[in-house]
Length: 133
Image 1: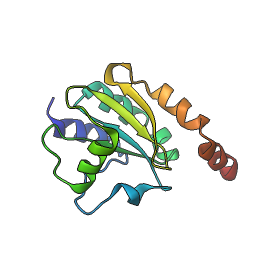
Image 2: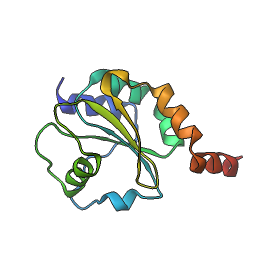
Image 3: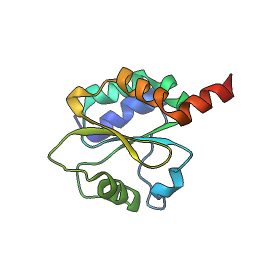
Image 4: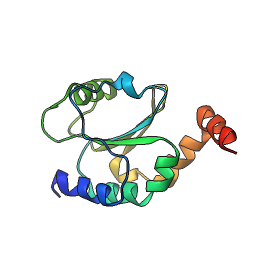
């Protein structure tokens, strides 16, 4: 599947995804967003993410799909270096709001329910949930 076709799936779901902007830095998201980074094209993963739109938005998740070619922005380069992305391995990675890598799945093992459970178990998310009640 072509990279942009996956992006269209997510835009159709109105999910908060982001093209990797040249001026953005990883630090810009710290304490504001949890980052879900998909390292290779995958229609099943894109559909899972799109299907969980509301749950991900509620949990302040920003989704990034890394392009298969060389990094085109400083943010993509920073994500690749920080996460030690290996282009030979298809993965989905979660970074917490503190900027730490919280979870790393092989793409074929990625499940939205596991992602949501992990986020909901984080102390910061528990505080957010209590504050919203």
